[in-house]
Amino acid sequence: MDSKEYILQTAVTLFSRQGFEGVSMRDLAKSVDMSTAAVYHHFSNKQALYLEAMNFAFAKQARAFDAVWQADLSAHEKLRRFVSCLAQVLTTDVDFRRFMQRELLDADDERMQLLAKEVFQEQFSHLMTVIEQLSETQQVHFSALCVIALVCDIIQMQALSRHLPGWQAEHEQVDFIAEQVLDLLMNGIKGDGNK
Amino acid sequence: MDSKEYILQTAVTLFSRQGFEGVSMRDLAKSVDMSTAAVYHHFSNKQALYLEAMNFAFAKQARAFDAVWQADLSAHEKLRRFVSCLAQVLTTDVDFRRFMQRELLDADDERMQLLAKEVFQEQFSHLMTVIEQLSETQQVHFSALCVIALVCDIIQMQALSRHLPGWQAEHEQVDFIAEQVLDLLMNGIKGDGNK
DNA sequence: CTCATCTTACCTAACGTTCGTTTGGTAGGG
DNA sequence: CCCTACCAAACGAACGTTAGGTAAGATGAG
Image (cartoon, rainbow over all chains, first blue to last red; front, side, top):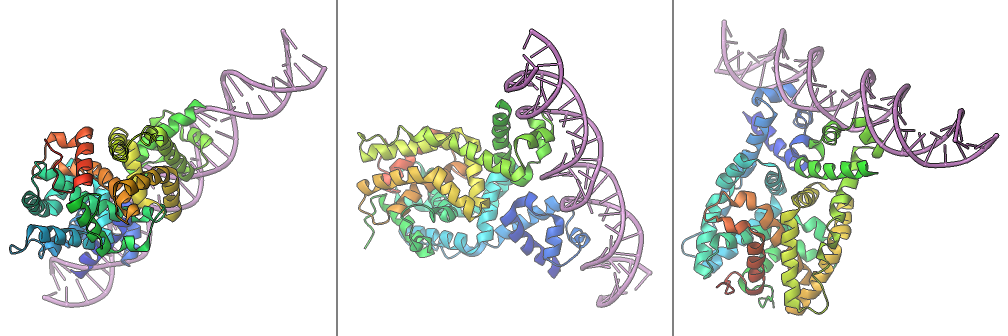
């Protein structure tokens, strides 16, 4: 049963880099050093393989956030940890991030619902609770969305940001991103959290 | 010479929805009601067509920001207009947004450089100037990136946000997004700009 | 003005390749 | 003896691309 997991692992990498249409079953078979028929022995077709690969990629990250929402922490500290953890995950596991962003582009409503339930919902609910404690805004859902959007897109745009004026190498370090995002969230653009 | 533009227009729509590999030359030819050979009469190959379509999609948006950076406006008002304009463009021209986000995933370094120069650089420089006036932060580049990232990803995540707790229909209205984002940028998450 | 020529914008039909998938098999451990 | 895990070879369909042709308009010489 090792082969199946190995195929899934490899499929995650390939799909996240080249997308569903960009990866052929022959490509994948060659990558895992098997025949295409062997791949079909484990998965009924390409679509099913893709969905399993997606679940596989997402399941790995489910417990990354366990240390974030501990009850004895202040709301501010929880938020800090969440931002930091999210930045860490998205930077470290490039395949996960790309897979997710590809799904945001390609998924139909059914798959989007799956993505919401399996990947986001739990963390999102926690995040909303924390924001409720920190802020008097009525737009808790929207604010939580902003937190996630900010971290995700800053990391996605890194490859672009390199070619824009004023770029510095430190902008790509996880800790720097987490710190700056938290500062923005707490103080707005004025940013008085700097040394 | 009308046909060529019609093909490009159609290609933008198809590529932005299905990606490079997801659109065949036969699909495209059928969409514009021509033979595939006719498409090859106007474009030397699929790659060239894709690049031209990309430029076509991006060129359309170049002058959307003209009214934003007028010299007699306050820095705050410029920022407000920029956020509003960006939200407007990304919401209205779905093809443009999807094309851009697909490029962020798929482009190599050369195409990324093109994207930076052709689409972002001018607005980004203006935005950095405005942020310099509004804030004492040393991280002007990073703050500018945050502004863009925030707007882009909130709009991208709308399809997902619909399936997360606390969602309301008004969260998808352009004016609401622009207003909330600006409030977050000015005041942080606490958000005292609400009625 | 006319006729031949050239150019543009398209067509049908096919090329070789690659695609997702299936068939029919083998080798080995329980 | 059967079940699991694989294989080589092939299926038809779809792919990017090209060859070779047509019909209509522009051009230019007589």
